[in-house]
Structures are given as structure tokens and as C-alpha cells.
Amino acid sequence: MIEAPPDRVRDVFLVVRPGPVGNGNASLLRVLPGAGRFMGAANLHGGPHEFTVHYGTHPGGTVEVDPDDGRFAFQGGYKFRAEYHFTPHPKGTLLTYTAINVAPPEHQNRTTVRLQFRLGAALKAGLRGSLKRIGRELGCRSYPST
Image 1 (tube, rainbow, N blue to C red):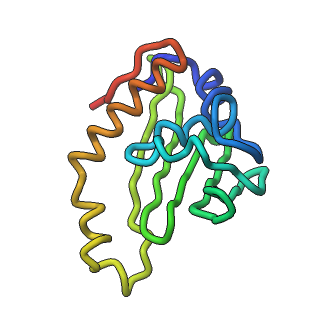
Image 2 (cartoon, rainbow, N blue to C red):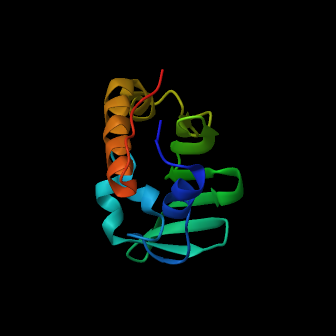
């Protein structure tokens, strides 16, 4: 739950354009559980709705954004996709987060892929931290809802 109007959330977290990731550009990437700390040196190529994330000269993932529908997705490599959906709520904006295993079927049972999705507790803790950073950036309360 983010106690800020959807338009405010959209204006801060769903603005994505080519260039360096940072304040005012793909800010949501900086609060991704487990990955945000690596995004400071990332650059986005493409647009307006689909981007490639580059770390130096190498592509390292993709971003899809639909501000009108309140959607943002990041896919890193071939096994993990994080989807964020911001929707209006009486208290402000409800954030729905989904982690998806997108590894090819022949890879889904590999130990490294399965391990990533068994770390549910760590992912939930990371999402709580992300909500705190989102709240700080917006200047409002944000917390997990039930």
C-alpha cells in the first residue's frame, strides 16, 4: 500500500526514457529487491514502452512500461521477471508485485533457477525495503497490505 495518489506514483516511478537510470528516470529499478544497488551504473536503450537495460556495453535485461495502465516489468537475464502493477485504492495506490520464473522449460528445474524462487522470505523482506524506499521518495507512508 502506498498512501499517495496513483498520478503521483505514476509521475515518479513510471517515467522511463533512454539514458542513465536514476532520479527521474526508471526510478523503480533502483528499488528492485536484490537488484536496485546494481542499477546506478545502468543505462536504458529503446522506448517508449520497451527498453533494454545495459551495464556498460552489454545488455542485461529488459524493461516494459505502460504508465496509462500502471504497469512496470523488469526481466533480468533468462530466468526472472518482476512485474509491478499500481492501481487506485481508497488509501492511495495499491502495488501488486509478481515474481515470475521465465526460464525456458528445460532450465526451470535447474538448481540455480529453483533456488532463486525458493528465496521467498528474502524476496518479501526485500519488497518491504522497496516499499520503504518508495515511501521515502514520495514523502508518504507505504507498507505491505494484507
